[in-house]
Image 1: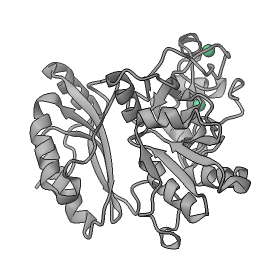
Image 2: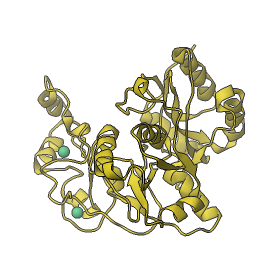
Image 3: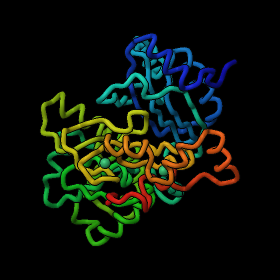
Length: 343
Ligand SMILES: [Zn+2]
Ligand SMILES: [Zn+2]
């Protein structure tokens, strides 16, 4: 039984191109009790591999978090399979705003301790006591309320390229950090203020809202389905779009444009830009914002040092990397002294 990818990303990209068939980028999550994540993982891999589904999926005892690319022609059988799993029946599927046939090039289903690295000890609070879920219409009303504090639950590099008007955007690298910062900022307003939160697809708010309720916040709301579902509803129901810029996403696309506003700058020259790139030096791979001119000038690298290393023959680069642990820049996404214009 094949439980792993047999094709490289490159081979897969060529196949997708050749087939010329439309694919859908979809994400969904569900907190549910999964007794045997390994078994469930294998079942998903076998079924989805047959349907030519690609993507990154995390399975844990607490549930599933999936980001996928599904051939449009296989969407029906894929949906049918989901509905055959009791806790995934009619699960809300977030369909990407901007489609890209190569959003994912492999099928990776991984068993993890948690479906989001939230850094929380779930035994200390009741994760089922969530905040009130609101749709786009209600959300728009809520965030106009002077008693509302609107909080972006994502990390700095995500909110940097796009966020809701008037949102608090904590300058954090991890979800765990933002929980503490927000609690501290709002400690005197646990009763009188409405705490309204949002994230990419809703998953981070599921835990955050329960956590804040546990911490004594009385009025906790979360945007159902996150920015992705909000955008869909705003378009379908012709509502005012209160988001500005791009929605950062965790696949090959890196971001999907929601409005034409460009709210960030190229980290190298400072001009308006909201295109995320990874430094081309394999040993660096820093995630940062780079305009086309700087990409050309710097050969897709974040610094002159990286540019020099990147220009070396592959074997020499490998020799340089030998013995060194991978730079922590990968974890410190979008932060480096070399980025002059990173705010
Ligand atoms: Zn630039
Ligand atoms: Zn670099």
